[in-house]
Length: 418
Ligand code: UD1
Image (cartoon, rainbow, N blue to C red; front, side):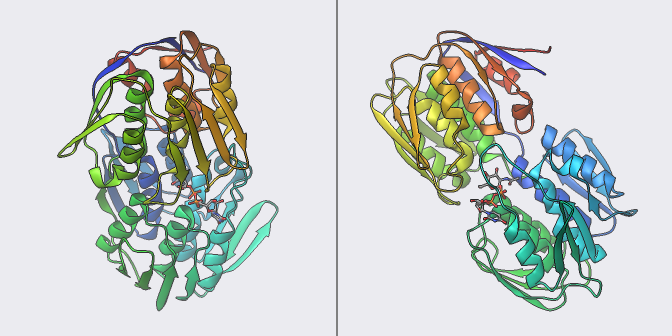
């Protein structure tokens, strides 16, 4: 298992290009199952999660090839409708194959994802949504088994709470269902909107793109996808937060300013200077950080996937910060690890209270989930001494060569393999 060894503190200075969004490419990959033939997706980041989803698609009979950030998925010889436990347990997003398989093959068998490092993550809405489209859905021996032998039928469904994954999954099923569907209280994260737009380009009939109500008129078949993945707003936010935590100036190229607004607002509250130029964004921190109050919300609110990185900054702020995660109230495993780095954090009832400190100190810490791990790496760049971050495979799931990119900004970070 690899670990990062990070010597701090260092200021960060320099520029980076942002890659394609992990959370946008995964539903697009699943959507490739909806048509027969070769889908082409550009600007695909070479991440563990993408490689992993390719394995799932290959298990279903698809052929996948990722070269120079172009992903080709050929679904001509699809011959299975099962996503087995050994694959699904490694990545919850595997559940995205449920809707497309059910729509295209009339049957899907997908392992229940099981536990997660940031608390309970049910998949009941995915199942209820498929039922609303006329499927019989059961749980058998740890698997979701969904059947619609006569095809899916349009229906009405309301997501409560708003769910990124369930919106994508049920929508992918609805586009090939007979008749009309109405999906209410849909997620409007940019990654969802990208999927909706891609489906429309492939021939789906969907009204309400970018809104919380999607009205779908089912079609008999779709064309293969031909799309480019939007920039990763969480990767971008993480590197901007790195400038906040370590101090210095980081310029990013290739961002979508509109997608970055909730994160930029919090970075400004932290006292960072942010400047926007076309598709470029610069974050500079010169003086002390200011305390913040942050509450995660579905988009366009502040993303839960940026909560840990902001906590690393708040740990060094001049005052007391409060971070509440309304989406995953238990998503605070990073807090205890940050305490090992000298941060002063207490978590109670879904809110972290962070009393800022002048100085973090190096310590061995353990990564527990993707964004938590990235936050520990950021904290380590500011901590005095040599920090070891263990279990970095979590980071590799969602950040391409984070150590090379931070090193290019001046961080003293190396990867060690055991
Ligand atoms: C996606 C993102 C993840 C992000 C999360 C919230 C991907 C691959 N992952 O995860 O990075 O942190 O959105 O922005 O895109 N819920 C239910 N029942 C369900 C499904 C969800 O109650 O069937 C609840 C969840 O417990 C949570 C809330 O809905 O409280 C939102 O979760 P959801 O948007 O579904 O998250 P994911 O799609 O799993």
